Amino acid sequence: MKFKQSIRLLSVILAADLFLLAFLIQIIFIPAPSAAVSAPEAPRTEKYVALTFDDGPDPIHTPVLLDGLKARGIPATFFLMGSSIPGNEAIVARMKAEGHLIGNHSYNHVPLTKAKTSAVCQALDRTSTLIQSITGSAPEYMRPPYGDWNEELECQAGMTTVLWSVDSLDWKLKDRERIVKRVLKDVEDGDIILMHDIFGTSVSAALELADILQKEGYTFVTADELLID
Ligand SMILES: [Zn+2]
Image (tube, rainbow, N blue to C red; front, side, top):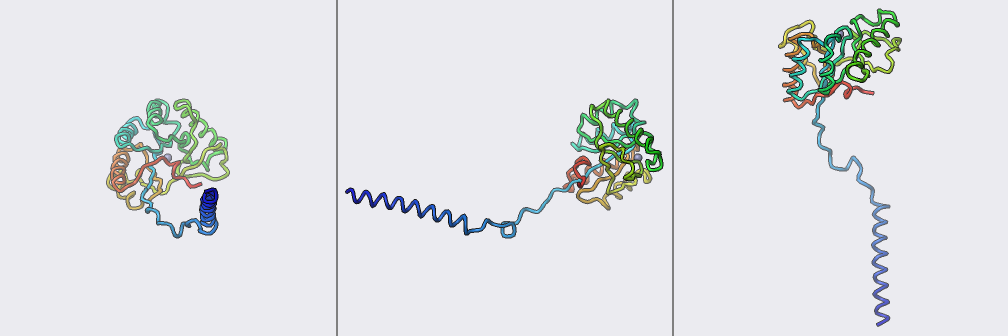
């Protein structure tokens, strides 16, 4: 009896050892599946695009745009011109409350590389101060008027410059259909679209583009989400 018990105990120990050995062999000799042999990932289907609007706020057209964006649940990016803010503070507050990104577009829309550095700093600071007094935070992003910028203009003081990858030419075309066509011709995943919320045709084109691109599977994001570091 005692002998049988010993045998049983021995076989239990042996089985446990074998199990442990098998486990160790598996860890040491069987390589973890590499990316190359694992099942292929589902193709990336998400497409992102950002609508950006310069030169506002405009007392007539910006609220219409905000209504349309709200109805569609779409965030946008607004680069505000400081001189247009006084009198339109409620519109700026609404942008912030409705989840849009607010950036700085200087004060008077002068080409910044042609101005004195001190004047550039003043134009940017004045606009940031106005925005901060309404929203509680200074803008982190700026777009120079006409995209006119150089690295010597270091006074941007922590603001990231945001240009664009698709120019709607809305200020020139001033025709909803032609603006829509112009953007659709070029738009791709990751694009930042330049528009201006100071024209009625731009606003109606933007909302039509929003509908078309949403149907095409695009997700609208604010411009900061599409910047490549
Ligand atoms: Zn502008």
